[in-house]
Length: 157
Image (cartoon, rainbow, N blue to C red; front, top):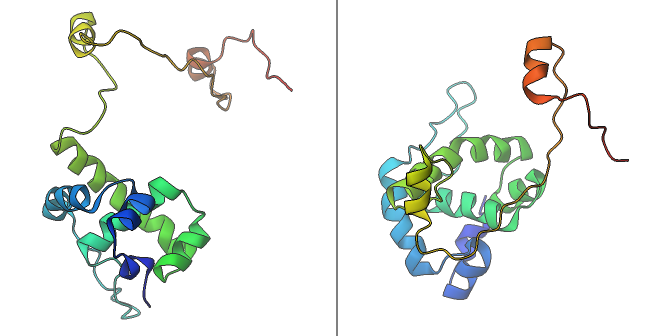
């Protein structure tokens, strides 16, 4: 089955579906293709692996991250099932992260000390910190629970 990847023609289509121009897509593909290993065919059913083309695999994961369709729509767009779509997301995402890391395009999320933080933000005049609380499930184990649950706050209803 054909996927929406086969319909790409213009720079505008690349930008609207991946967030990258065709030139930037191709530059990222050079790094991505050196790392990406396609899944092999299913030895039991003989079914061929999807996304064996590294360009299509890169487009698939960038399209997913940009458009964020449901797995059902994603599978329909690329010619496979929703379960397969979810599996490919989990399979390709680490490769994309490694590729972006090699390109120096990942945001720094942890700092070893205050000096490293200060150096990273030396030219920054304004910082916005997202202080949104994310509810987590309360652990049953008392020791684990103490690490994440104060016992003071109740969820807002």
